[in-house]
Amino acid sequence: MPASVTEQFAWFSWCRSGFEPELAAELQARCAGSGLHGYARAVRDLGFVQYIGESAAQLEQLDPRQLIFARASFLQHLHLSGLDPNDRLGPLLESLPDAFPGQRFGRLQIEHADSDSGRPLSSLARALGNALRGELRRRGWLDPSDNDRKPRLHIGLLSGNEMVVGRAQSAWGPAWPGGIPRLRSHPDAPSRSALKLEEALLVLLTDTERETWLKPGMRAADLGAAPGGWSWVLAHKHHVQVSAIDNGPLADSALATGLITHLREDGFNWHPAKPLEWMVCDMVEQPIRVADRMATWLREGWCRRSIFNLKLPMKKRWDETQRCLDLIQHQSGRSIELRARQLYHDREEITVFAG
Image 1 (spheres, one colour):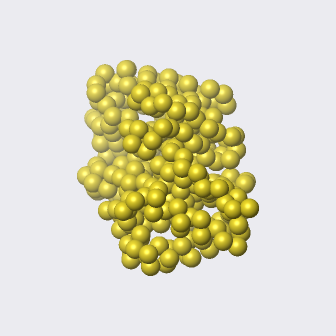
Image 2: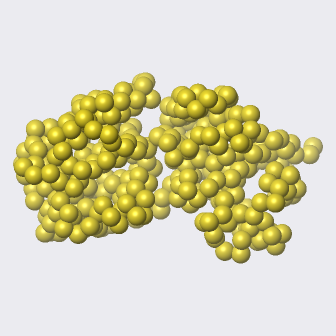
Image 3: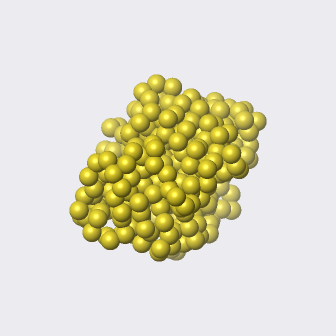
């Protein structure tokens, strides 16, 4: 039986397994707010969501960088199913000229979901990538080397005989398959939460913003700092002077940086005598309470910029996300930009930049 190749336009977004309903609700809300007509398709625990629309031009009215619960997104053009395991690439190669007429891509990205059903596809993804990359270059559809000035060709493996094909602009996000960064845990980091802040700085800030806003000698506060993972990132990686606020102990490796001052105080009560460049916060507390405290810091001018986590409830997580971000926006007392994302290193939480 021949493979089925169907033209299907959709936003295809990878997400944390179990958060498909939240991403579907967010896509539905944001697309409706942009006047887009379509519907979200999601199955819990598969690790991805599709928002089916009328055309690629219509769907591109949405900026995928706004999406909180999507790790990465691409604009889907094709759906292929019933693929022969002995010839998965033939139907794909035949369909590309009509789907992307005259298009030349700068990078090929073959991905799979970060889920129980998706992870077993990793070996197949590598094998297909090795075979397809050379063939695309031979046919002139892919640049000889990676070129982020051109669109990326994305192939999402849904099973051994099913895939979706689409494209993405490099401006939509880093070229991390599935939106998963390859960060290594440092042996001196006080906790694995250090990776969370490292990822947040890569995802929520641009290269220029990191260079401008994180300079040696700047001052920051870390609320609820113990054992010191976030403080360590700011001090060790960026040479920022940090006031670590927590009644609990800090790891020796954090204090060894020489740039961290430990203040045994309550993170919900302490504030600096003079304004700081940064405040970061990863406290385990009700999200609305954290949001209220973050708004106070911004309103009082105690920091110029902040990165913080909001631990989400088990139910109505998209509703709670909206409630917290709306509170910060309305109570901060000034015009601020909010960027939020559920990072790969996040769990039942989101990470927010405010500045």
